[in-house]
Structure formats: C-alpha cells, structure tokens
Length: 178
Image (cartoon, rainbow, N blue to C red; front, top):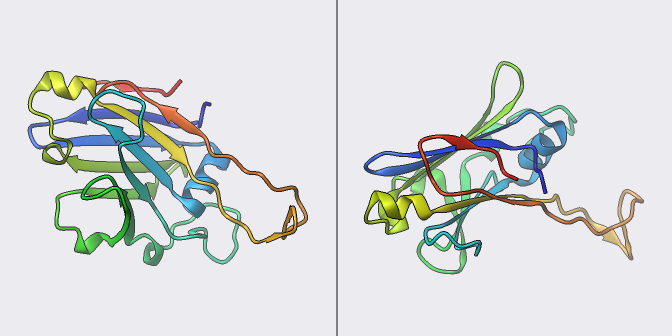
C-alpha cells in the first residue's frame, strides 16, 4: 500500500540514516497523532525485526486543531522494539544510552520531514555488502479512539488497519516505497 512517503537511506562508517518526507495531509495527520514506525531488518527479510516508533504521544496536533503542528513537549519519547530485547521499551530521548536519534519537523512548505539515525553496531553489520541487504519498512500507526459497542465514539464504524511499506536495501540513493 502506498503510504505517500518518499524516503532515502544512506550510511557512513558509523551510522545508518533514513530521511522520509510526506506532503499528504492524511499521512501527516496519522504520523503526528499516532506516530510512524520504522522497521529495520539487517538480514534483508520482510520480518519486522528492529523497530522505532516516533512520536509516541497521542494528539501531537495540539488544541484539537486539524492542521499539522508540533508540540515539542510531546516529542521527547521514543518506542524501541528489538534493540535490547523483544519487549517494547518507551524511553526518553535524553535517556538513550546509544547514539540513536529521531526527529520530526515541518518544512517551509508544511511537508513533514522525519529523520532517523541508528548506529551500525546495533545492526551488527560487518561490511558494506551486509549493509546492502538491510530492508527498511514504514508503518503508519492508527489513532485509537474510544469505542461504544461496535462503533467508535464519534459514531463512525470501527475497524482501522495500518499501512506498511517495505523498502529495498540501503544505498547511497533514495527510493520510494512500492
């Protein structure tokens, strides 16, 4: 499923970098309200192996506004899965003991930019050919709304899915998920 995300992946001697961008309002709304999960599989498989969800706070729009905005107070936590254990871990970004970073911002055109940096040592890659095997995937998280019986609290029908997009191997050039 096309999530409306354009991205590029690159690396240097110490880190893997993912930069993603979307201008689609629906994708921006989902990312800001419920987060975007980046999945990395160092072995080139489609399995969701290592994940980082950011932001994890609900409602980063602030004041119920339907226009995208960033409340910096809600952007200080990150959810990790598969780094140190299979359990989900919610960590303050300032408390991370590793050189992993993720940030989100709106550019001058109000396109959403998402930047992610992870140490290669965490991915256990030993050579450049190992880096070429890495697969990257994106998952838009859905906002969970209170339910009343089979219907959501706002009167609409329930049953929201999530989209996932899998990318190819890491390279010096970008790609667009298919």
